[in-house]
Every structure is written in structure tokens, then in C-alpha cells.
Amino acid sequence: MNSATPTPMTDIPHRQAHASEQPPAVAETQSRADQWIICEHCDSVYESIPLNKGEAAYCLRCAAILRRNHRLTVEQLLALSIAACILFIFANVFPVISISMQGLHNEVTLWGSVQALAQGQITLIALVAGLAIILAPALQIALLFWVLAHAHRGQIAPGFKMCMRTLEHLRPWSMLEVCLLGILVAIVKLAGMLDVHPGAGLWAMAMLMVLILLIAGKDIRRLWDELGVRPE
Amino acid sequence: MNGIPYAREYKVTLCHVCSYVCPEDAHECPRCDSPVHRRKPNSLTRTWAFLIAGLIFYIPANLLPVMYTTMLGSSSENTIMSGVIEFAEGGSWDIAILIFIASVVVPCIKFLVLGLMLVTCQRRSTWAMRERSRLFRFIELIGYWSMLDVLVVALVAALVQFRGLSTIEPRLGILFFGLVVVMTMLAAMTFDPRLIWDAEVEDVR
Ligand SMILES: [Zn+2]
Ligand SMILES: [Zn+2]
Image 1: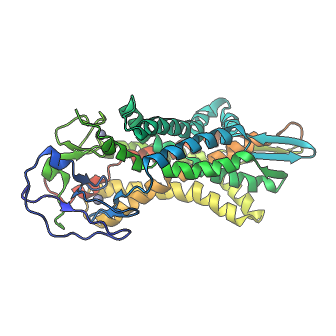
Image 2 (image 1 turned 30 degrees about the vertical axis):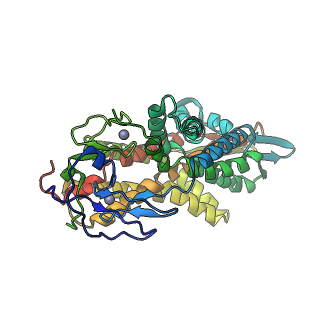
């Protein structure tokens, strides 16, 4: 069965790739395997070829995205992670919504909304909400800043492996998009019974959400190759 | 089937954390030290467990109130559905539909699709493999939007705290609802989509 090398993946952007002719058999060595891409959804093996800016490679078997060409350089990512850090502080310090009713006034921050869930039996859900809208994004930003600041100088950050593994495991639990939609729904919900004003934290939150989408995706895995982290 | 080789034909396995191509017999990724498995261990059993736990929690999540409102002396308790109906009656159709999709449609689609994945994989079905693959990626993508209602209740309860005039408190239902979301997310994470394609090959365990 091992007579042919993996099919080269093609790089037609936003369209399914089609298989081209198989190259002649090559000795199966690990250095060869470094050039391979395995689809995580169906286990198909492809030979990696360079992609142009903005192009993506798709799996021929299951149509999943195999790889996207990164549009942002390490310097740009570092700059965005610093911006994300500042926006995160703004989003947490300033209230996201404020309301008034018969002369009374109240406002809520992200932390305040997590605290509102921490009541008796339901405290567990406050932990989930706290992870989703505060802790996971905070850790993502801090870890990204740490690895990118070193990558910028061509260095492998101390604790690089642990940082990268943690980033992978945090990704599904970071839910700023959902939080932003939740804030908008809450505004509409309360607008019926009292005066509602979006707070400064909401705008910071909206920008932060876009930045997190840009910097915290799977794309960051490229640092393993770009920094040349050697397997033991 | 269409000639694209599978990783096992080259005696390699993918590391899911760093995308490194590991030798097949590796237990740990040589590059990032994460555990590596040819297939996620006990994927079907564990996904079933999370899915059933999610289904069980979904019952109290819908029956118990998620929110307790006092407004100028009168008080009321809302379940998820009664909250949606209240929005619809108040004329906010868009918000009613949004919450209905996030709290009812998305979890139900997740239950159905995960159940379909598990049953078809256990029967080693070769039916619509490409479409099932896409479907799985779709529910992975939409799953966490169900947290919407939890966050809305949190925000509203934190805001409306005017003693004597009006207060809103979260209730037990929201805990179960949050647990449904967590359970379905864990179920999707433990399911190994590569099992869909294993039906194509005879010699897989
Ligand atoms: Zn694939
Ligand atoms: Zn790895």
C-alpha cells in the first residue's frame, strides 16, 4: 500500500482542490513527513505546498479547511495582542450597560454580571460564565503576548510548549462573541421597562472581540514551524 | 475510495494540539508533549455519556424558572420558553426568534446531530460521509452560542437591583441550562470525526 506519496494539496482559494498526478515514490523518512499535512477531520494525508496570501487549502475527502495562508505577520500579531490587552482592561473596568429608573441609577461590568450568577446553588454556572467571558480571553491575550513578544525577536519563549498547549485548550471556551450578543439582547430586553444606555465597556468589548478572532485562531500554530521548535 | 491516502497507510498520526505529524506508535507528541492517539480513546462511549447527561439536564433546564422578577410589588418567574413568549407578545419578534434559536433550536440540533453521528458510526455506515463530516463541523461551530441566555440572565440580574422598586434574580433553571451547553460542548469535543471515515476501511478495530 505504501507505493505512492501523499497527494499534493492544491491551493485554489475558496474552491475545492482537485487531485493532481501523484509524484514518484520517495523514501519514507521523518524529514519527508514534516512536509505532510494530515486532515484532522478524516485523517487524509497531503503533501504541503506553499500558499499565496489569502489562499486556503481544502481537504478533497471531507472538504474541511486544511490550512489557510496567514495574512498577518508576527509583528502585526504582536501589535494586535497589545491592543487587545488595552481593550480588555477597558472592557472590564468600564460598565457595559447602565440603566436608570425613577431617578435611580445602576450599571454593570463584566465581573458584576458574573457575580450576579454566584448565588447559592447556581454558583457553578458563575464559574463557567467567568471562564467564558473573562478568564479565557485574559489568558489568551497574556499567553499570546508572551509567545509573540519572544517570537518577534526570533526567540522561543520560556514555557513555549505549555503556553501553546494552553492556548489550544482555551480556544473553545472563550466566548466574547456570545457575550457581545448577550449585551445587545439585554439592552433590548430592558429598554421596554426603563432607560438603558450602552456603556464605554461595550465598545471596547466589540473591538476586543474582533481582535481575538484575528489573533487567537488556529493560525498561531505556525509559530511551531516558524520558530523551528525541534521535536525531541 | 478516491485514492487519497490515509495517515495509517504511512504509519503516522496527527497531533491535535500542534498539527505535528507523529510516528504511529508515539504516545506523546515529540514536539509539544501532548498525548497522541490514533483515535480519541473511547470516543463513542464518552460522547454517548456526555450526550445523555446533556439530555437529562435539558429537562430541568426547560421546566425550572431561569429568572425571578419583582416589579413594583408584583413578582413573576420565567422559564426559557415563557421568556421567549413574553418577548414575542411584547412585539420584539427579532429578539424572541434569536433567543429561541440559541436556547431551543441549537441544543436540539446538537442532540439530534450527535445522536446521528454516534448511531451511524457504530453501524459503520458509509452513507453520506462527506455530508456527515460537514454537519459535524457545523454543530461544532454553532454549539457555544447557546450560552447566550445564561449571559443575558447574568447581565439583567446584575443590572436590575433597585430594592423596593424592581429586582431580578437568577434561578436554578439557568444552572441546568448552562450545564446542557457544557455537556454538549464536551460531547462534540470527545467525538472523533475520523470515525466517520473509518467505515471505508475494513481493518480498523
Ligand atoms: Zn479531510
Ligand atoms: Zn503536538
